[in-house]
Image (cartoon, rainbow, N blue to C red; front, side, top):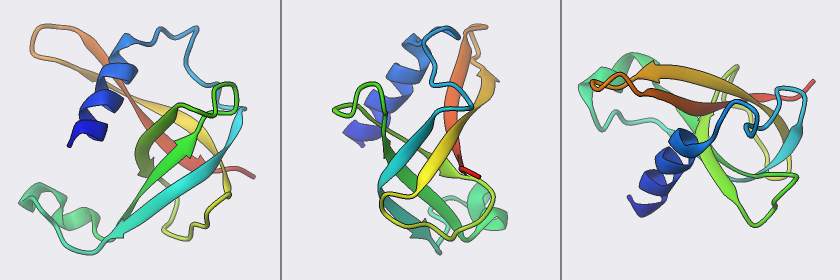
Length: 103
């Protein structure tokens, strides 16, 4: 859980100028494919892939997010960022990373 907490805090703290560009290709460091819904709200999304990526500009920083556009993934596979915008109860905008295979 600590990694997820840090990732969300990182996403909230970033400004639109500091987010990885949709053009930046970054490699998959690790991944898992979920076949079981830990929460009923996720049941319609099964299976889904969660990836951990290393940022090109700061390889020591890794960001977790869903892989969109399929479940086929390999370590080292290049992906590009897409940002899923949500609004918190207090009105704060939260940007959560989603990753799409680079073409």
